[in-house]
Image (cartoon, rainbow, N blue to C red; front, side, top):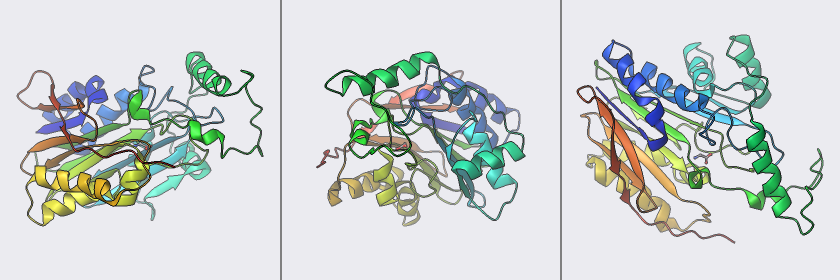
Length: 313
Ligand code: GLY
């Protein structure tokens, strides 16, 4: 039994491991671990109290993938429901003929299944940060009136990689039966253009699991992982017979070598079916965490760095 997670998963990994030890599935562990992060108001890039979009609205993205079957479920742009990961899991488990629901449809589904809804998804503190960010970027210091039809193209250049503040959350687990599951949840980039969807709910981009080979999940500039299908690439490279480190490195190099327009970085965590695990980052000093069944607490380990120069404009 093994769980790996992005560092901000530390708040949920022990409870997730307890669930595995009690016979829970890898998917249970992933959901439990991520829910703890989603409920944490101090993590401002996942779930409740994440940084809002440019209009000050919180839009959540999340996905799960079951490595036994390649079944998946995802939600995007969902407002008013803090536990996006649980709604994503239900998209998969209720056997809809769909894998991804977005916006009003995701909210409708969440209501229909009785998912926990919160009237207030942002604290006053985070609203103040949003207001200040807007005010600081004007000559007058006044907050601009961003109405329904206001042009936003200039404003969206304020968008910020959540990794610079805390980060999307990744969890991948292998349970006692050897099954693998993976999950990702995020509020996306701070001050994003309304309707922007990152890699977290896109299966193959930010999340992928296949019992036969392994799994990968990403954080960072989601647009990069979408362009290069990063999570699926790692698993596909494993399928070709590459060792885990080589597979993960190759997926990072795919991003670097093609030279796209990047303003952020990329990070991934990955494991193979035999329980090997690794983290990669385009930034030095980044870490991830893991916990095996015989460990009383998680260990934090450094990610290998693959430099990906930022290029924008
Ligand atoms: N990786 C999270 C996002 O770009 O939204």
